[in-house]
Image (cartoon, rainbow, N blue to C red; front, side):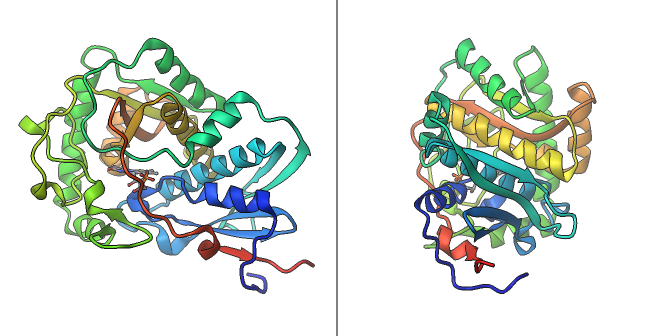
Length: 327
Ligand SMILES: Cc1cc2nc3c(=O)[nH]c(=O)nc-3n(C[C@H](O)[C@H](O)[C@H](O)COP(=O)(O)O)c2cc1C
């Protein structure tokens, strides 16, 4: 990498965009990104040291997370009244360089840009029980449109039998992961008890479900200290399907994932992830076949009405950003 000077991000729009970027979700809150700022341009880089070796051996989920960060940067620039100009995977010689983004021509932000940008700081993963309240049709459409706007498809598992089949696959995939000592060690290494700037706080894991619940949620080990709770009886589960599974397709899917999550937040919905079947290769193949075998399942979400969840920590933007000297 070129000579690095201490980070100094001076352009206010760039600073806001980076603060938005680091709020993106990431597997185990690894935050697998780094940023470079140069002449008003933001480079988004993959941090290979923060890719989960067991859970995410080919960095698929890390690329989704970086894609989500890219959408946050785009929205922040759009909200500031400029057209974001994005170049994904701009340089074959720099495989870690995932995107360059710069503010282009002035443009009044649209209402959607404003709504979604405002949701960035409010969006949190919510692993607690949701209410037994149906997500209305118009919101289901809004979530689907959000995925389509980024070139993906959100499939809601609302046909009879689909949810049961998925729940069984989720349970099997969850068992496969938790029986693997390497998976357990990795999860433990990223689960935090005290103050930290990354990893999942044990308290962010949901309570144990009374009667086992319909869906197997990932256990972060904090469940023994809280009472069992009843989860929603008829959960809304959605699979994000992408047209491909290349690095480019994953970066685009990450932007679609984040647009879906921010749309949910903007409409007062909570979401949590059910990644086990897409992380386990056999589970992924079954899920792909279940949904027609043409597209690639990239993420699975549980959506509904919950009580607001608290945020998880992040490394501040300046700690993950290098300012490159002007040439
Ligand atoms: C690709 C991806 C997969 C994830 N998988 C899971 C999962 O299976 N279970 C879970 O509880 N959280 C999962 N998460 C949520 C992260 O743990 C969460 O984003 C991170 O801890 C940061 O917290 P926040 O989303 O509240 O900001 C996933 C996130 C991403 C981006």
